[in-house]
Image 1 (tube, rainbow, N blue to C red):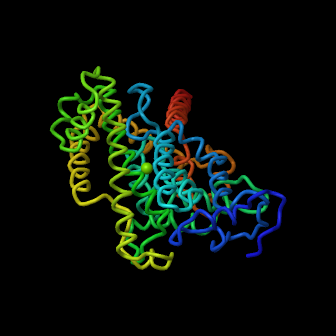
Image 2: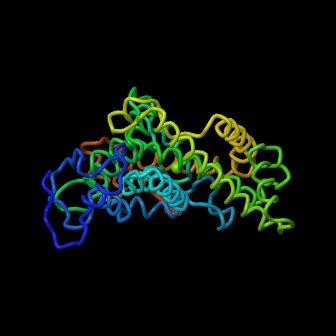
Image 3: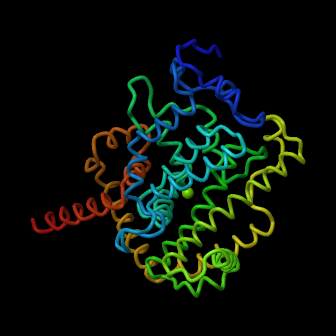
Length: 382
Ligand code: MG
């Protein structure tokens, strides 16, 4: 691929050549885009991908989508957007420290949850049920559908026309990691960063909301050790200060563990090219001890937080609403906006209704549900 000469002091190709490790993915080796486009004079291809994701409607709607807790439970906790930003932050730290392509890691991180429907995994389960006879629903696959087809923002092509490596990275998630080949290290970094972020912030949110008490978490070895580390540096912190410091410690500890392990594996395995990355086992993952501790924390969070009666009640309510809307819009697709009605022609009614519902924010879904109820009451009164 010929680089355009420009008046910019250091072009992105030169910058990448100077900074990236031999096992990182440089833009120069990208397989390109489905619809060929001229290169941008000063933005690298993966940087452009990142920008396109940030400017998409689906990305903006993440600000009003549930991560674990819905808006009824307060305004402190993470939304799908702030979770995404935390993942991107950790992924960039890892990518920079390992001399990987930060632009690619960031694009993948910002994309990774873009396909989530309203109401988090509760919404996903319900859409999966509704769409079971039509190929099911999976947020990772939906992310690809959004960026390849549903977003209509550019005159020259459907979707965002992202670089192949971004699509492949997301496809790896959609295949549930069953691929015989390992993905690029930039993809591995995002997988690891996602886990660092949610393990940590779900505990933080549950404490702040009051679903958990600080003492209860001391049963979890990872948490207990993080508290011990903080208290060895800071004596007599107030409860809120202690909680926040423990969260920072947990992130730092996990990221350090990932970096130590990855550096060692890269050196021992003499990984010196992208081909070597693809043919090896996953290289970026928590060490054995950390992995065990994370499993214990995740088990605890599953039992005590994700299955908390308050969370379950909200889940059921959200699922009932989605199910009803799915039935209603399937029977009356003309109630959907024209774009989704037109989509029915080639995607079928069920898939188009699924796309419409999946794109909704929590708030918009609730408004739509109320509107459908009013419409139904009005029809019954006549
Ligand atoms: Mg995530």
